[in-house]
Image 1: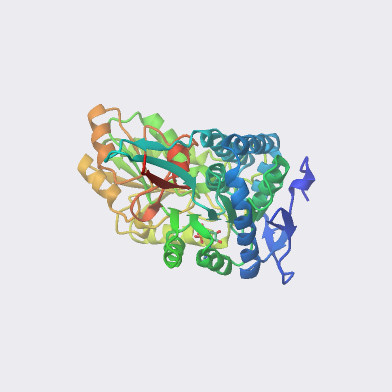
Image 2 (image 1 turned 90 degrees about the vertical axis):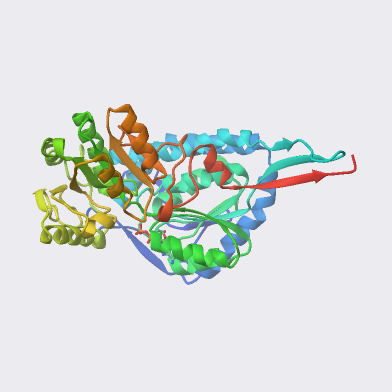
Length: 484
Ligand code: ADP
């Protein structure tokens, strides 16, 4: 089916308590290649009972894992990082086959995903506590940080490896154990990561993976008293549902939900840099990321020039199956994604927007979609308030800085925002005015392992990556010592 250098990285079973497992019912579901519909593998369709077993395994493994020294955990994680990088190409190939993104992008994601493992392996040696000057004589006040406990991680299909490592690396580094539910579209990347984790020496039960029926697995994870934290990346409606489900056991949650990223280009911007940034932030992963520019706001003085250059660059994008040489945009994940993109374009055009390029399903068929630029878009169109998750760049025209900031903030979401300007006063003003967790300034690519990723408003709670990302998996314990 595919030429993996190491065919044993293609695993089609779940991973519970250090063993590869089938569903109790024996049922499976198919994982398909979005570029051609081929079935790549059949994987276990698990539900509540198997999830409870995985939780039990994680609970049993928690004590010994947290009691290891940070250095011991760091060494095992370092090995895991090295194995991921040694198998970068195989992991990328698996990812391209099940997810669709171009191989070059998949290679990038494997490195990006691995960087969290490396970073948190290093960071866990620096989980410091505090001492507090006593408030009364004969007391000593000490603050320690402890791993939160067993963690549930539910991840999406758009970054099949990085969304797992961004959650599991800090959790495992902190001393937690995890039960992961990957997206149904992309479980093979998750299983391959588990295979490498096992080879690296991550003990059984520390990292478990169950695939299957989301509602059942989600219910078991959220109802469990053993699980102390849920970390989720996905859509806002599912995030809200999971937060509600977590309320009964008062679990901590980290939520990376939807975005509606504005990309603002001011008259004083470096035009070519802005076009370049817009291309990267818009069309990466065929527009299927939560930080992809969703609304491109351009000041009237450079609107025409910007639009023209963006259309030229968009016309040059190579749409092809991800495994083809030079592919820059693969298929969308599934048919529903493609019809949603069509609907949003149709709605905008029916209300007066103009398609400058693209606008239709691609001649390649299936879920391939033409890279699209539409102009004359306004805030009464659905595309202004809905996450596109596809290769469509909608251009809005604005006159003043105030108007741009107001439009940018006119959304319940607050994940990433971008703006281009060379005016230092404006840079500081707009940075402060944007209600977003992440702001790219003259920069279209903002994610990395050393910086905090996360949103405000309905885009989520918590931060991933960086020193802040570790905090999300730690509890503070305060020791008040008397009788001294
Ligand atoms: P997307 O639109 O990106 O697929 P979803 O929020 O539907 O976003 O999916 C993100 C993750 O959430 C996936 O792993 C999916 O299986 C999971 N999921 C969806 N619904 C539920 C649910 N009711 N309970 C638990 N997990 C769910």
